Amino acid sequence: AIQCDVSSADGGAACVAEVAKKLGEPRILVNCAGIAIGMKTIGKDGPHPLDQFRKVIEVNLIGTFNMIRLVADRAAKLEPLEGGERGIIVNTASVAAYDGQIGQSAYSASKGGVVGMTLPVARDLARSGIRVCTIAPGIFKTPMMSGMP
Image 1 (cartoon, one colour):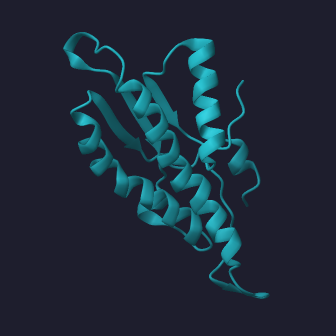
Image 2 (image 1 turned 30 degrees about the vertical axis):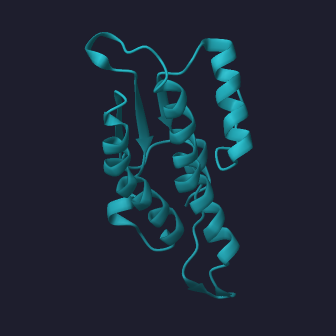
C-alpha cells in the first residue's frame, strides 16, 4: 500500500508519482479518503472548535480536489483509448451531503462540497477525455464508521 496525505500538495504529488512508477500512469482515481468528527455547533464545552472543522474540510474536500488535479494532469497527457477516453475519476461523497444529521456539520459540508464540485470538474475535464462522477453511499462498515455511535 502507498500512504498518502491527500490534503498535502507535496504529499499528493509524491503519492501519484509513486503510483505511476510502480503501476504506470494512472487512468483511474477512486477518491475515498475521508474523516469524520461528531460535534454539535455548540456543545457543553462551547462552540465547535474551528480547527477540527477545518481539518475535515481539508481532508474530505480539499484532499479530493488535490488528488483530482494531480491525477487528471497526468491522465490528460496520455494517449486516448478507443473512443477518446483517457480516464475516469470516481469521488466518494455521502448521503450526509444531502441529509446531514446532528453533529455532522463539518462532514456534511465537506461531502456537499464534493458533490458541488463534481459537475464543474467533469465539464473542465471532458475535453481531455476524463470522466468524473461522484457516489453518495449511506452508512456501511468502514474504519471511520467504527468509532461512531
